[in-house]
Image 1 (spheres, one colour):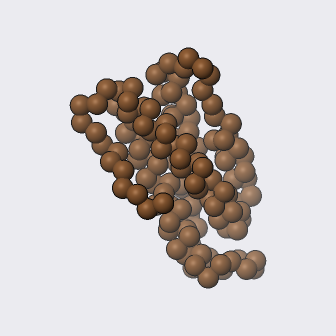
Image 2 (cartoon, one colour):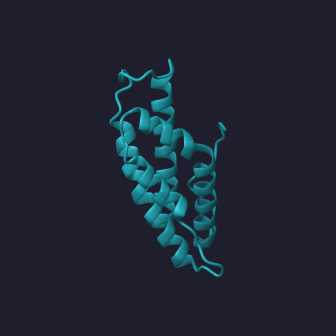
Image 3 (tube, one colour):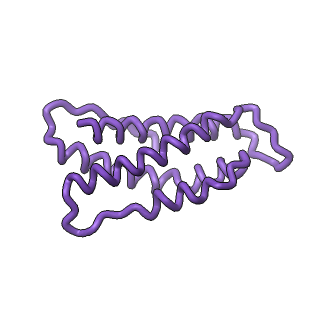
Length: 128
């Protein structure tokens, strides 16, 4: 899933930016939620399930307005930023008593980078 996606688009209607961010957010959840949950659980963040459940429970009603999309993305952004702080707090040389994979440090960095990317995308969309 190494793809390059522009997050800054000039002269695009606001609705398209919000829609693109919504699609990216959905793709992020599909691709990364399970891995992020496992990572944070291994690192001892036992309450992470609540945050991920909050993200997965977000939905839009049929006929949702741009304001509804913006509100959903703003709520998602708050939760994602909390998860990003938690992920950044994991030391890359983390050695809990439980066995962790040998590439744990790469997993931490990858998850942190993906979180930073989706947060930047959502910040840009709600600010537009």
